[in-house]
Image 1 (cartoon, rainbow, N blue to C red):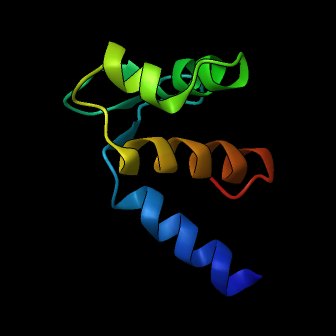
Image 2 (image 1 turned 90 degrees about the vertical axis):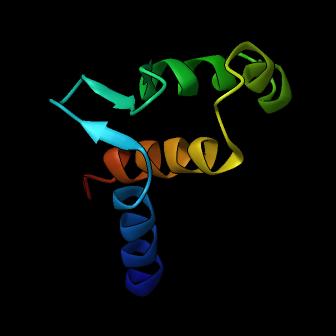
Length: 77
């Protein structure tokens, strides 16, 4: 599991996620807050609908947001 977590941490570090403070985490070039992305997804907005709202949002961005949320929850980031 540690190897997998390290792989996820590296994926987040290589993503467009910028950590500018505990609650100020956003996607570079989009300016979209990571917590907002996770909030939309948790409230039932599908990935396709979210990508229609934000056309420059990629599948890799969505994956990185999910990984970031998980890693933050287990205190790895």
